[in-house]
Length: 197
Image 1 (cartoon, rainbow, N blue to C red):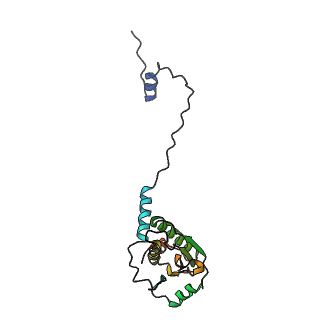
Image 2 (image 1 turned 90 degrees about the horizontal axis):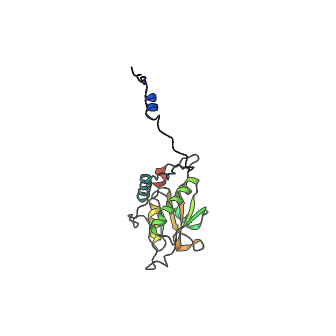
Image 3 (image 1 turned 135 degrees about the vertical axis):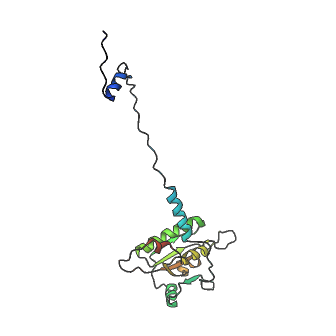
C-alpha cells in the first residue's frame, strides 16, 4: 500500500510545501534605495492665504471720502483728534521702522506692505515710514503706488493716521503712518491684523 502524504495543518506548512523546490536568486550586489518623495504642497492653504490677502487689502475703495483734500495726501481715522495728524506731520513720533515699496509692481507691493504692518503691530511699533516713490518712472509720470498704498492703509483698523513725509524724510514719495498702540499684554488676533472696516 502506498504511503499517504501527511496532512498539512496550517498555512505556513502549505506555503513551505509549495515552494520547497524553488531555488533562491543569486545576490546581484545592487543596492535599492528607497524612493524619496517630495513633501506635499498645501495648495489649498496657499490659495486660501492669497484670498485672505486679496480680501484684506482691496483696490476697490473710494479714497475721496476718507482722505483730506489738498496736495499732500493725509488721513485721520474717524473719531480721532485732529491734533494727532498735526503731531504726525510735525514729527512728534519717531519713525521706528520703514518699508521701501518704490519700484515694485502692485502685486509685489501689497503682500510686502501687509507683512510689514503685521510685524510692526505685533512688535508694538507706533510710527512707520512707507516709501512708495514719486512715480517719475511710471508711464504717465503719475504715481501708481501712492494712491494704492493710501487705499490699503485706510482699510486697516490698526492705522490711525497717515500723512506725506516731510521733505527730509522722502516728501511726496513717502508716508508717515501712525499705528494703534497696543495695551500691555494685549494679544494681536489675526482679525486685528488683516480685517477691513
